[in-house]
Length: 512
Image (cartoon, rainbow, N blue to C red; front, side):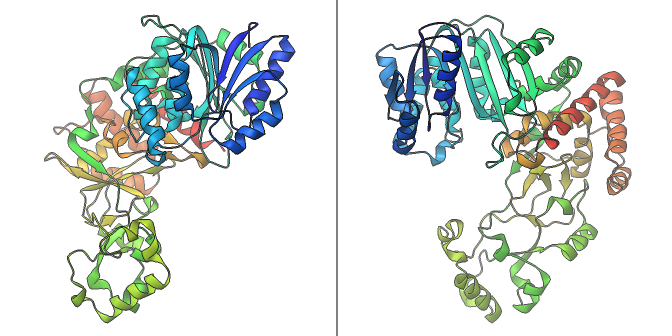
């Protein structure tokens, strides 16, 4: 709140928290404001009115995407947008509301997708309602920093604002949803493109540390960063030197995207792992070995660059390791034990779960195949690309990797373990509660790898070091061979890449 009579819109006011805060700030500064509050949920709308109904507020109990159309047709503009939009994927959204939103987005040059989340559309369309010189302040998922569906939004923000501040929190602001959020502050809206946007990043412990003076002080002493097309914003949280080195080398033409060499697909979705993934006891009790495929379902079992038969035997001792696979097996060929086990599943209601009940035969798990390799989907310390030398299947806790070209899988997996690839995985992955980094399939295929067929890495040496949990020694070896000797990086640049990985890794791991 800066000036008298500013027009402010809250596109999803909920029960009125942001409205109440805005009014308190305006009162403290002696400002009169013109506030429009939109909320689709009638119960929340009523709560917001009860809390703030005595004030001069325009209330709209309607879907924001419908309200947006009315506001645009009346050529209404605002000086400030604030709020905390809903975090709901469009694939789960009301069809009519989604179609209206997509129509508005296409009208202003976006290419919406059902894989996107509704919060992005709220931000995208809110920007369109701002006057030149307008400001935006919204609490949104940290997905803004790196997900593909927010690429257009990131680029639109820096093209149409003079200054952006990204505030992140060391502590989870909403622990119940286990999702990292950022406070996006943007000012100096302008309709024409071309101005250079300054970006500042600030990290505080939690929301109680937010203070205008602190923000201004940090910005005053921090150098602004500038983005480029396609850049992931997670890298903004690196020191200037690390940021520059990572940005420079990630674009190097000698690197190969994983997707150029292999496809990455989700693992097998069973619908109920407890039923479909069997241990030795169940396997023998119902005599199901002829109906099962060996599989792995825990990243802790594949903590090497090569998953061989010896590691599978060890995994089998700890975890259920057989997948019920009834593809192309006629029911007349079912054994008595298998029929009993299927009956047990029906008694426990396994067949009523969504994934199972939509199948032609609820107990037949689709898309079972043996991939060339695995890729960690959820990561704690560091990602790994793993050669599937044991020729086993995997569940959806692990991604499946299939080679597209005739390359040595073990060598590709070894080359994956380098400081540049590790750093970039932190930039493009998604951070969740508990310090977990998640790589989706498309994000995984974008990972840059210094893979050269004329460089043969010592896989046995790498395996031995990984078995000793000595990832630093592996990085020293692979970085030396690929980044320094083959790509011509200086030791200082490699050190900056390593530091980038450590900074971003520790940043997410330490967030609780």
